[in-house]
Image 1 (cartoon, rainbow, N blue to C red):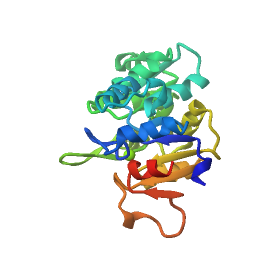
Image 2: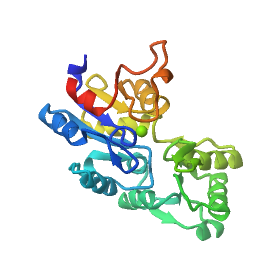
Image 3: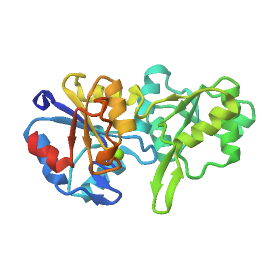
Image 4: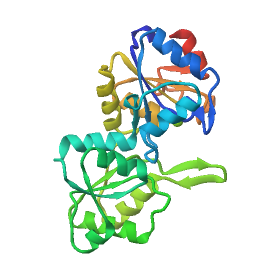
Length: 265
Ligand SMILES: [Mg+2]
């Protein structure tokens, strides 16, 4: 069954590295993919860093992956919106540089809080993780959504782990705005189907010959299965063996880590 897989969508944190530490066998894993002619893209819900920054991180670990093979939820959001809106469309952004750059690169025009306060209604309000979001920034997002701007979120992650414990993530900002406006956002990142479709498109793959490799059951694995893809769980990240459902709703394959996966590819 694994022999049918010609394309892999790879989650990054918990799969390729943990924080700033590469997984053992990282180089060998990518060598194996290239030797076996298995295409891959890297896909992350993290919208704060650009594909170029991830290429740099991988280069520090001795692995060459061009930005064209890296899909962040910021890039996936910008690609998705690019297909639906004309160049020059006004967008209000609650996000970090990765999201701003992805939207600007696709010719969206980013408007500021003062312009919204002065009466401009952007076509879109796009919200990603933002460590500097304050009330004035969020209030103008809510105002624009109230006035009819479409509400879009990069990813639904409510929390993310830090050295001192769980911190509020993009999903918490989305919840704030959803409560304030009573409007539900379109969410691009995992486990929603949009990012998986974007990754499939970049790979030129089909649901039959493409598998997701991830460490989170509720995003990587559940999302892949919902999108019709095969799912490979690695136990090198957030998921412990006892978390795996016994009812068969979980991953198609389970490996300790990418080194164990490389042995059967
Ligand atoms: Mg992960």
